[in-house]
Image (tube, rainbow, N blue to C red; front, side):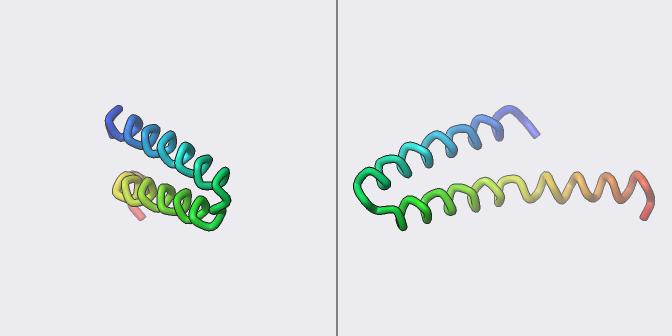
Length: 64
């Protein structure tokens, strides 16, 4: 896992928060919620391989 992933997550967080604020101030709360949910799903898709690798390492470490 590199610094590149951390910067991408931070960029998505900043963009999603800006878009959500703009949508909330324009009265589109549902779209703001869906935007934040889409950002969360995107970041989770980026993190799933690393989480899988972590669990595999722990499994191999304890030989389960």
